[in-house]
Length: 175
Image 1 (cartoon, one colour):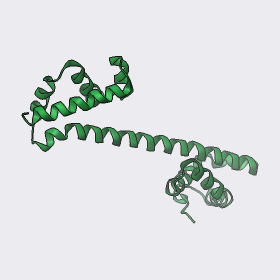
Image 2 (spheres, helix red, strand yellow):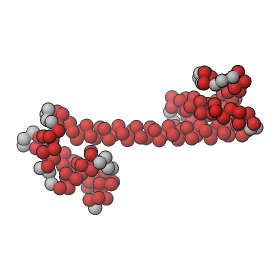
Image 3 (tube, rainbow, N blue to C red):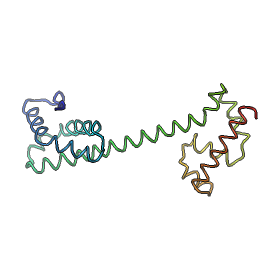
Image 4 (cartoon, rainbow, N blue to C red):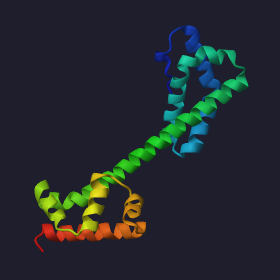
């Protein structure tokens, strides 16, 4: 059994009530979160977060009938799960951006070049290539947004980026 956030609850009545809610509905909350997240560890986090979230609402929950309580807890678990999914998505997107930026700038790190040298090398690229480098790594625009700005397909924007990075590597290596 998971630990309840009882330390955040004041009063024995509230602690007992929260423990009873957990006993009655904890499995349903866990099941709901697990179905939405497909990850047991994240679902267990949502279970805990759901019960922490309802602590300020214990008095109001006492007034509800058991079916309404269960519905409220399930709905809260869904909202917490969706928040968790958004957070995971944001973290994944940020990690992908960091990876792309590291990949793009690895040419300056691998060669021991400073930022000034890198920017001088970027200045040697044609206007579209400079724009794609700037838009992706400085402005953090998606390939879709870059493609719209250039009036090309997303695949073409990726290809321009690839060529620009290849040229930059060559310039940085003195080729």
